[in-house]
Amino acid sequence: MLYIVPSPIGNLQDITLRALEVLKSVDLILAEDTRNSSRLLNHYQIVKPLSPYHQHNEHRVLAHLADQLLLGKKMAMLTDAGTPGVSDPAFLLVRECIRIGVKVECLPGATAFVPALVNSGLPMNRFCFEGFLPPKKGRQTLLKQLALEERTIVLYESPLRLVKTLEELAGYFGADRHCCVSRELTKVFEENRRGGLKEVSEHFKEKGVKGEIVIVIEGVSGKRRAAVEALERGDVSEGSERAEDVDEVDEAELGGEG
Image 1 (cartoon, one colour):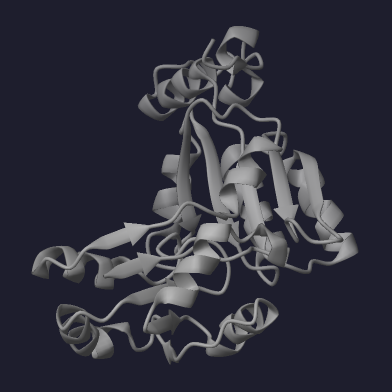
Image 2: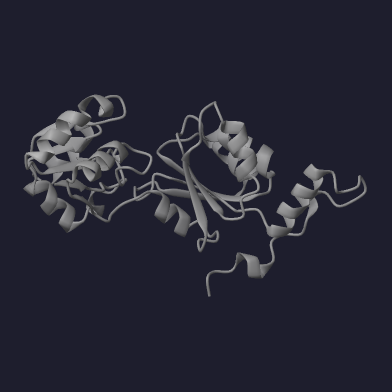
C-alpha cells in the first residue's frame, strides 16, 4: 500500500488528522528531503524510518520500492511542502504501483496553488496549472501560447527568478495584464501582491523576494485574443486597433460559474 500524504506548505497545523494517523501506521516514509520531513515528524512525535525519494534518485530506487510494496510493506510519501506529484516527485512510483497492482491512496490536503488562486481575485471557474516554466528549451514557445490562454493561469516560481519571470510575462502578455503573486503562504509574513505584471515586477525588484512563490495571471479576453490572432494573420490593417488596445474583458466574461 502506498499513501500519498500532503504536508503543510508553511504552518505546521495545516496537516490533517488523517495524515498524522497514516504516518504513524506505515512501515516506511519516503521523503523528498529527510531533514524537512524530520522536522514535521518530530513536531508531532512520530518516529518512523525515513528513506530519501527525490528527482535525483527516483529512477534508481523505483524497482526496489516496488518489490517492497509487493511484499506487503506500507509506505507513505512526503515532499517538502504540499501534495506529492504536484511539481514534486511521485508520478513514477504511483504509475509503477498501478502497473503492478499495488493500491495507491492519495490523501486530500495542502497544495500551494489552491489558496493562491482563490485569494487572487481572478476568475477561478476555469484555470490551467502550468507549474514551473521550462528554464530554457520550449520556454518562449510556451509563453507565446499562454499569452493567448483565456483561462486564469497558475505558475510556480523560485524567489531567485521571480522578477525576471514577471518581466518576461509582461513582455509576452502585456504590462497591464492583471496578476497576483503569493509568497510565504500560511506563514506569518504571507503576502499577496496584486496588480499589473509590470507594477508587481517593480514592487519585488525594489523590495526583494523571499519564500516560495505562486503566480496567478488573468487570462486573455476573447476579444483581445481574436485581435492578436488577426494581427498575426495579417488581417488587420496598419490603422486598425491593435491587440493591446482592445477593450477590457466584459463583466460577463469575468463572472463566475453562476
